[in-house]
Amino acid sequence: MPYADEPFSLVIFGASGDLTHRKLMPALWSLYAARTLPEPFAIIGTARSEMSDEAYRTRARESVTRFARLKIPSQHVWDRFAGSLYYVPGDPTSPELYGRLKQRLEQIETARGGPRNRLFYCATPPSLYDDIVANLGAAGLARVEGGWTRIIVEKPFGRDLESARALNRQITGVFAEEQVYRIDHYLGKETVQNILVFRFANGIFEPVWNRNHVAEVQITVAETIGVEGRGSYYEESGALRDMVQNHMLQLLCLIAMEPPVTFDAGPVRDEKNKVMHAIRPIDPAKVDEVALRAQYGPGYVDGRPVPGYRQEKGVKPDSTTETFAALRLEIDSWRWAGVPFYLRTGKRLAKRVSEIAIRFRRTPHMIFRRDPAGVEPNLLAIRIQPDEGISLTVVAKEPGPDLKLAPVTLDFKYGEVFGAEPPEAYERLLLDAIHGDATLYARGDWVEQAWALLEPVLEAWSRTPAALPTYEAGSWGPPEADAFIARDGGAWRQP
Ligand code: BG6
Image (cartoon, rainbow, N blue to C red; front, side, top):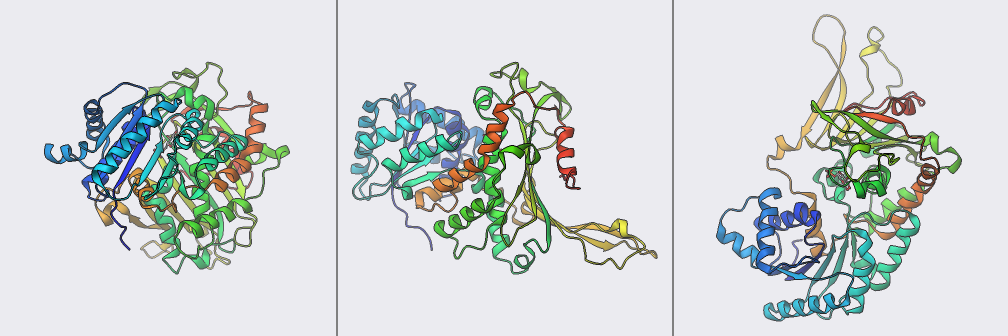
């Protein structure tokens, strides 16, 4: 059913920051250019720097020109979009700003008429979330008569269980849970959404999607970039907090969840929570058996020499922050008992690739005795980026008089089949929040459960900061990572 096109106002805190520049403004523009953004709308940026509406519009144009999926077709179309951009300078910790924001919102709403729909976006450093939420509440901006009010909160959502709980308490003390949209941009990626369509709109996979047929699942999110000027943020974070607690556990949930009764926020998020509850808790005394970390040293990426993590700007020369993390998780449920889920992520790895690989069990009996070597178990690879697609490896007979077996791949590539570049994750997610659909957002209890799961690892790693292997930038991680998976008799896939 198409959504009603109602007017709305979006207030972005952190409007002069990197996220707004690289992701939010370009996404809003692309939605507008594709005629999917409800109209009329107003986008009010706010940050500490002094700027006029005009200067903000110029800045927005730079963001769009550099980063948006869709180009600006003409000055006229840009002017129409830019005419809805406003800027209100101010200190987000000061109540005074909120009075002015309220005034501006009311002016805009009175001028355009219709419902008073408001979306607030926290795109600031997380240390400001508390202030923003409290001030919105105190200014009477958490609810409005004659419209909806919602708030999007960026990651990181806390830095451990305790801080995530405190943040949840703080936010839900001011907003109702249904008003809160905790963003995880991985959930907005086309191929990630496709996992559910692939699993639940096709009848042939569900019967084999369990311990009887699946031998193991590997989830890899490998990046070639380093910390890219975010050294001081990353020092406080590390790979486990930055990637595993959110993006990777979300992917795991989508692969492991039971079929929800409908594709709606409630049922989908309930099923993901059940997975989180079924993941076997990590024994604090045995963290080393299920978790591994490492840090990149100098090396070569795409033939270029690159510095080690400790040489990056904003990073301590003796830093023990991990830039690589691997986990072995098990899900104690009828569907998954005994199937290992391996998660691996790192910066400055050999290749940029995010992929989920599902390796099936071998055939129970091999009749082709003369060439058993050619018989690899079937493998389903869901490629999230780049080269989005899905491939299934099966065994076929090589042409010729001999009975030689060889693996072949049945390949579906998004780009080849659907052509056009898929929308950016932020486009989809912003639009969902505007339409009030939280299916692709993280619920508060899920976030807490994810922190609770990783708590023993975070604690063990902070107790023994020195025990940190290094890997060469541009490699697939430390040799210890191979030994980690080899203990089970397996090997990492090299996608
Ligand atoms: C972010 C992390 O959440 O995700 C970054 O903070 C990481 O460190 C990024 O680089 C990866 O996102 P994508 O969409 O490029 O895979």
